[in-house]
Amino acid sequence: MEWAWTEIQGKRAHDPVIVDKMICSSARRVYVPGPVIVGAGPSGLAMSACLREKGVPSIILERSNCIASLWQLKTYDRLCLHLPKQFCELPLMSFPKNFPIYPSKQQFVKYLENYAEAFGVKPLFNETVKLAEFDTVLGMWRVRSESKSSGSGFTNELMVTEYVCRWLVVATGENAEVMIPDIEGMGEFASAGGKVVHTGSYKSGEMFKGRKVLVVGCGNSGMEVCLDLCHHGARPYLVVRDAVHVLPREMLGKSTFGLSMWLLKWLPMPLVDRFLLFMSWLVLGDTSKLGLVRPKLGPLELKNVAGKTPVLDVGTLTKIKSGDIKCVMWKQVCPAIRRLKPHAVEFIDGRREKLDVIILATGYRSNVPSWLKEGNMFSDKDGFPKKPFPDGWRGDNGLYAVGFTNRGLLGASMDARRIAEDIAQCWKAESKHHLTSYSSSILLPHT
Image (cartoon, rainbow, N blue to C red; front, side):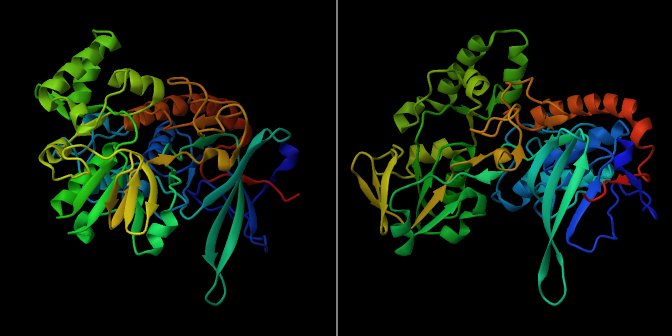
């Protein structure tokens, strides 16, 4: 393929990519010596750090203007890590010893910023990947990205860049786009002055003091938002659409997650599930009396089969039992919604309730199928790798996925280590034919 490349004069030292500054149009084509990583969340940062440890350069394309944009821009203020910090560390760097067992959102973001600085990770921000596909002729990935750059006057010029690389790592994660359910009458409710927001836009219950708020969804986010609303003097209602496992965050003086991982070393999963459910009954009582019916599968088996995370209670159940989190029927959460009306909601059992605000704790989804054009590794249905854990991290033609394990930060760290090792082996074999250092790169000419 050497015929396809030309040397670039005046290369910038220490830059992982070289941009052809002689191109007058807004379209650029850039050859990247190492992998292109899409996404600068924890998964992308871990991936870049692991590659750097192996001596492999990489670049990260991030559509937002900061690292960990989900954590910084789309999470509520009271959020803390749901698992103890030792299960949430990224590879090669531990949390500071003075951090609490469950670091706050602010502490976790600070950890990520320090992590990026420690490993020299400098993403290219405001780069939105629109298309990525494998070029079978070149044997390379073409990753087309759009960004806004300062143009003449007061307008921003749209810049289109095509990054050409041997390896592509998808690190956009399981939570790239918010999921908004289609609820009949949502427009009527909003036009009458009602407010409908997703938890991605929710920061604090302070602005909802004294207002009647319906929270739709009973995952960890929905439960914690309800609790936050209570603490700020709002009057929350809770809609539970599906069966859900609620477990205490700690059992026998240890974290429930940590205890589960320890028990799984010695006991089969069904037996550990039975233990967790028994302990939950002792600590929390019968949650079905509150409208929180448990699934037929145990919490660990359900997580393993369907990727559905159990809720770790941090005080919300106490508020439901006391009636601080209210509902149409005393001490029972609301059933599913049939439709919205001006200033009110109608449930499937025919009951109605006047409300001021609806908060959608309905989760997020992967957006990979919207920009990655390949038919083997990722499912078009949900944007996750087709192969189940632990085999979903590697695809064909140098394509990889990090952070799609449904196992949180621990799973992302496992992926990052595997991928870095795999790429490093190829890098050592191919580097003498293509590159020799960070300060040496070549550019694909325009066709």
